[in-house]
Length: 337
Ligand code: TXA
Ligand code: MG
Image (cartoon, rainbow, N blue to C red):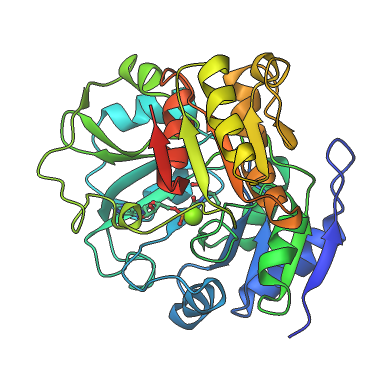
């Protein structure tokens, strides 16, 4: 299959012709990747079962892992769900469009493979001008997981999507690099409180301003509240070691491996990179927002170089740091606290 590519530069007027071509492919049941503020998504008409099946096929995604339905506005969100708890309106006012996914009772409007047979559906309104234009042009909900091969780091550029899915999908709308860099926060919306199923772009502290956040209960590795969390994720092509304790400890670990003839890449913020010697230094900038924005691109970069181990610093688990550490703990092969 030929994968079409449309280039829409960020900051310039969105080319309507490109949007309508992409929407037309979605309408006839094809798959098209598009940018959101978090990561690129691989979209298909959420009301069309065979279109949705193509997403699972292209990604090699396990069939029991449900997809998020993307919509342009609150009215479209309401058309997919039953029994919207009152506080959800306040969450929507505060955080949508934005990197927050609401898991609510499904009314069955989407195809059954979107929800992987669950009675609930995840819905979000992405905060990206290209995504919103595309969703408006479609006028149907667009099911979209991250546009990577299953198990690989999520794509934050159109080139990442191309690397994983060229020839397997109908098109890629290139809207430049994404902003947030890690995926949306997924919350289960219960009657009077929410449970965070996956930490992401909206932090626990932000949600707690609006509604109580309860701890997850009865979660086991085999049956987590969010099916996707049980699978291996975000894996770079070389072993990743998470090393805590600061620059000196990191330097010791690297020196030990270097002495054994290993080539080591260091993934860290600039403050640490300046203090530590390594064969390859991968900069994650300075703030935790920078780290989130640059993380997946750097995990993908390592494949193209010839290192034996990636050492990453351990990040503080506050704010967006919760999402960063959640992803790194899933990607790691070793944790030296
Ligand atoms: O930022 C994002 O969320 C990106 C962009 C493209 O929107 N999408 C994304 O989708 O990360 P995906 O499929 O890679 O991750 C969705 C997560 C999975 O862990 C899935 O199991 C969970 O959301 N999920 C979806 N629907 C659910 C439901 N009804 N109940 C529980 N978890 C659900
Ligand atoms: Mg994903």
